[in-house]
Image 1: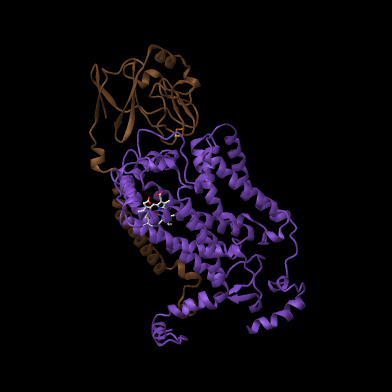
Image 2: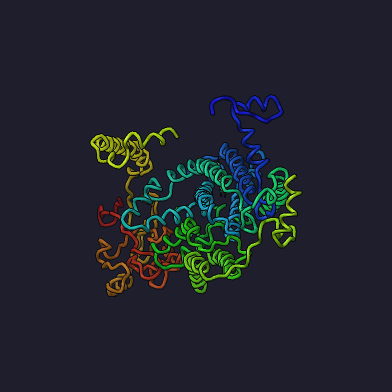
Length: 422
Length: 190
Ligand code: HEM
Ligand code: FES
């Protein structure tokens, strides 16, 4: 193992570096030659999009931090200064603000892709778990970021969410005081939230790295949910998927730009342009849209601790999903019974989000309760049971078989030959 | 590779683990690990502790409130430790309503007498014990809830004229801060 790396790089400078630090070789192996199932659909764009989005958040965030002041007396005004006085400050802030929303849109689609095509199943359990860790870190980051502009929603959102911890018996109150660094959300809270809001995205970068390493060990899943049987089932990542990802990226950037330039405050809440006032709670507190389904689950139970446990449970259940779903078949394409339950689940998540935005009264309480019940039933009852009783449709012989309309193993084998040369 | 191949021949096999040499090694490993754990704990503690309220936050001066200008039925809100404190000059009706309920019907049973020092002055921290919103009911035009006291709009908690939780998700009555009557018309909170 000792000695220079045997480099295949042509360029002498790159080669010189590669022999001593074989990062070019590694990139070539993992991002150019990397054999990838040839049947990806556009849902496989969202991992790459999430990565780009993370970079956008970090770059815009660093530039915002050059002008932002994390002090209760100045925070609101410093953000207004960014909007009015700083050159292109409005652009950088609107990109950061809407970037958070785009990030969650992308990641939610990415997660539902995994749920539909069974990407969490063996051998990709750890890959999935790392993804759930990223989701948790993202939620913490976005929550603390929303506190920074120190508007009314910032302040009261922070108050309500940190108070969740007071639901825990005995230690609850001390945890909340510890989180606040005082007896209410105040300057010490704002300071530490800024510090952590700066830190967590870099932790996310670290976990994303592990996520990708794990992906490159198991290889990607694909819409059929069956493993590639050989080189005839795969194509090199570059140029096939680099170009497909680039196309997806363009669409994503168009949507992103539309939000930033035409409706930058649509996804936000007007009350956050009122400076924080610890003496007046806004009549209707709502979190950012991406937290609404979880907020609905929190309010579905009249008991404080119960609501908090269910809300945390709704994410934690994802960690054990690989062991809850007992079906050996990955893709919902071949699961006639599970598929309608999946779509019901997706609809319920949207309905929960809607209920979370409504006042917790009357019909909305019932809707939240039914939705919450289904949310947990799906993971804890439906998926475990279906795997046992469902008769899946026959899986195709290989990825090539249905793509080439061969239908049978002989045709697929024959058709695969020319592919191998490519 | 080499280690794995030679390990059996150097006697870790069956009886090895009961030999005196192994026991001593185990003991050393255990004590080392324990010392390391204590060390890590000792280093982490100051960092955790640094996030708790600092001396300056703890030393925040207590607040004095002059009660004289508050007429019967009126409420005022003052700031103490970054939180609103409600002071209400209760009417005879308020006090009677607070005393008339049977304690066993309350989610958090507490007699009105245990929550006030002088029946007409109710002093409480104006923070909903559910998730910390400021309940409505201080201004004459506010919604006061179904029990004539305070109403928290965040998730619908109703408090009575003694600030006790009557209906909704809040688990406890509104907290009563420490305060003393400096004289008949002045209180010091904290
Ligand atoms: C995972 C990536 C990130 C997410 C999801 C995120 C999310 C957010 C959100 C939702 C806001 C509130 C925007 C508003 O309503 O004004 C915000 C504000 C802010 N963020 Fe981030 N952020 C991320 C990364 C970063 C990074 C890496 C930095 C610094 C290096 C940063 C610095 C800031 C600053 C200074 C503000 C306050 C200015 C403002 O409110 O626009 N963010 N962030
Ligand atoms: S914070 Fe008052 S009811 Fe939830």
